[in-house]
Each structure stands twice: as C-alpha cells, then as structure tokens.
Amino acid sequence: MTDQSSNQMWGGRFAAGPDAIMEAINASIGFDQRMAAQDIAGSRAHAAMLAATGVISDSDAQAIREGLLTVLSEIQSGTFQFSTALEDIHMNVEARLKEIIGEPAGRLHTGRSRNDQVATDFKLWVRDQFDAAESGILALIRALLAQAEAGADWVMPGFTHLQTAQPVTWGHHMMAYVEMFGRDLSRVRDARARMNESPLGAAALAGTSFPIDRHMTAQALGFDRPAANSLDAVSDRDFALEFLSTASICAVHLSRFAEELVIWSSAQFRFVSLSDRFSTGSSIMPQKKNPDAAELIRAKVGRIYGANTALMMVMKGLPLAYSKDMQEDKEQVFDAADNWMLALAAMEGMVKDMTANRDSLAAAAGSGFSTATDLADWLVRVLGLPFRDAHHVTGSLVAMAEGKGCDLPDLTLDDMQSVHGEISDDVYSVLGVDNSVNSRQSYGGTAPDQVRAQIERWKAMV
Ligand code: ARG
Image (cartoon, rainbow, N blue to C red):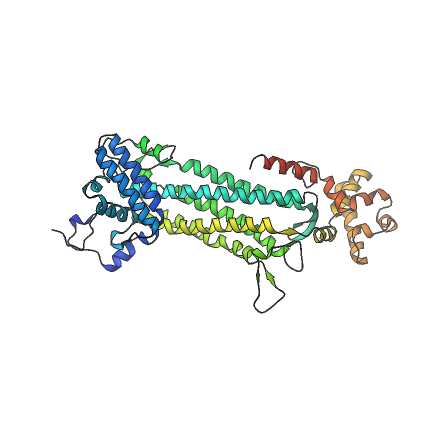
C-alpha cells in the first residue's frame, strides 16, 4: 500500500509523499490555472473522440463531458479549491471530476498523457493570445490611419540622428508606424497559421496503442491538422518562442513610437498634446503633465524581450522529448502576453486621444535649414550643376544663413548670387517647406498625394 500522502494521480510506486520543497518547486498550479478553460476544452474533445472510436462507452463520455462543464463553472465562479499537492491544472481538474462523477473520470486519461495535454492546452492559450494581439494591432493601425488622414499634408521636420533633415508630412510619419505595425500583424498571422497543429494524442512521446482519432480531436479544437510526429508534438515550444519573438519585435516598435511621443510632448517640442486620460501630474510641480503611459510602453519591451530570452535559454539543449524544464514556459509567456496586450491598448488609446499641434509642427519644419537638399536639387535641375558641386554651393549658403542668424528662404537674391552668379528668383519656389514635401512624389515619398494613396491602400486592408 502506498502512503496516504503520496500523489493520488501517480503515487502508485511511491512509499511517501514529496518533501515540501519538492512540492514547491514541482507545482505549477499557481500559474497554469490560467489554462483551465483550454484544459477542459481539450479533455472534452478527447472524451468525445474516445467514445466515437469505441475506446470508452458513450455513457462514460457523456458523464465526463458534463462533469467537466461543472468543473469549469466552479473554476469560473471562484469556488474551485486548487490543490498544490495535485501539482497542476490537469490533475486538479481530473481529481475534481472524479469527486463529481466517480469511476468514469478514471477513463478520461486513456490514450493521452499530461505531455500532450499540456502542449495542447498551452497551444490553445497562446493561439487565443495571437488572436488578441491581432485585434490589438489592428485597432492601433486604425488609430494611426485616422491621425494620418487628418494631417496628411501637415508639414513637420523629418529627422536623421535626431537632427533636422528634410521636411516630411505628419501623415507620412504616422504611416511609417502603420508599416511597422503592419509587419507585426503579418508576423502574428504567419506564426498563428504555423502553430495550428494539434499535439493531442501524441500521448507521452510515442503515440498510443489505442485506436484514437487524432484528426477528430484536432478538428474539434480548431486545429488545422494533428502534429505529424509524436516526439516533436510533445517537445515543441516553437509556438511560444515565436509568440515571444513576435511580441518582442512589436514591443520594440511600440517603444520607438513611445519615445517619439515622450519627446514630442515635451515643452521644447510641443509637437503633440497627449490627453489627460493618458497622462499624469506631478505631486510637487503643478505645471507638469507627464507622458507616463508612453514611458511605460517604452519600458515594456524589457520584460517582453526578457521572457523571449528566458524561454530560449530554457529550451536550449533540451533532449527529446518532454522534460520538466518546459513547465518554465508558461509564466514567461503569460507575463509577456499580458504586458503586450496592455501596451497595445494603451498606445491605441494615446494615439486616438492625442492632438498634433499643426502650428508647432510647421514652425519646426522650416527651421534647421530643412530645405537645403531642395536647394541643391534645384541647382542640379535648373543650372545643370553636378550634385557634388550643388552640395558644396548649398553648404556655403547654409553657412552664410547661419552667420546671419536666418533661414535659407531669408537670404536675398544678392546673397545667393554672391555664392553662385546664376541663381535666379525661381529658387525661392523650392525653399518653402510645402513645396519641398509636395515635390517628393516618388513612390512611398512624403508628398501628401503619396501619403493619401498609402492611407487608402491600408484602409482597404484593415
Ligand atoms: N505541469 C506540467 C507542465 O507544465 C505538465 C506536464 C507534466 N508532465 C510530466 N511528465 N510530468 O509541463
């Protein structure tokens, strides 16, 4: 006889229960209870399949499937008593099922193992999160499109090295992020399609001698097909790694945009005003309105990429098939998923609510000799100078304007001609920022027409 305190699920060969520290390091119920709904869905599909293939009776399957719904409602209503001694969600659910329906509960675990069960549950959970991420990214893209549409022709400085480079349009800048989040969206969809194979029925590692129908359970759970190799099915965590790496890249994008919002909302820039709903005040400096949401979004990439690194390291060097190391996958993914969804929602809210200050953008657009390239291009186009010479002439004119403390359009024609005698009045037409952006008609360029074309293309897709 086994000791009363040994595990009721696997304690047959054990004379004594585990040490308290063993129980503490071994148990995952503290976190994997988040997969309760997925575990019950997987078990209900498995029970139906066992009956359909004649492995268990219809009446046992019926009792199991109904009992599992009772367990689910207990968990959802918060009355379920989770037990650390029962290690994880799988054994907690099964033990409770036994209390509710008795003997038939013991037939549920036929032709499967916790190894394929946990892989199935976790895949279902991660799949839901891919879907949530897809919705979150789509909502953010729509908010960016609305901003781009409102200010498709508003001029602002474009930067390289965070130094004024050339004027661009507000719409063009917003659409740059639409492209970035659009790639995140395609990574999410791509990874979701790749991961959608069912591990259920791979059993412990080798498959099973019971005449199970893995296609049936795969279909019932919304998978495209059963995973084709049972060893791989129970030891694959690529879907979690792809989730975390996709989340990491998206979090990097979010952090870049968040950083711009922090800079833009500062008193020095005043490019945007963030709404009160996404800002906080200072307890000591009454004038302050802090972009806390943007700062926190900027920081989230730390834990999300940290989770990616952590799971990569957990999986590195693991031999086939299942090892308990893999239980360390969940907390990382749960935390990254929660924070990714939160960051997406906060960014969407901020973008929806923020106001671009058109006048500040325009004033800044013209400063910093931002149309110097237009001047050089004019010298090439109209006077036929080689670009390198035009660059040199323009450099002299910039130095002259800098010396006089004015901008390029403020130089007189005499000033201009003192550097190059053939410069004519026509040059002023390219020194205005509106002319500058309107002239950038190359595909994907900053001209409002080009920006509007891209907005229309995206609106048809999202
Ligand atoms: N709680 C475990 C995990 O998350 C379930 C699988 C346990 N399998 C086993 N052979 N001990 O990985």
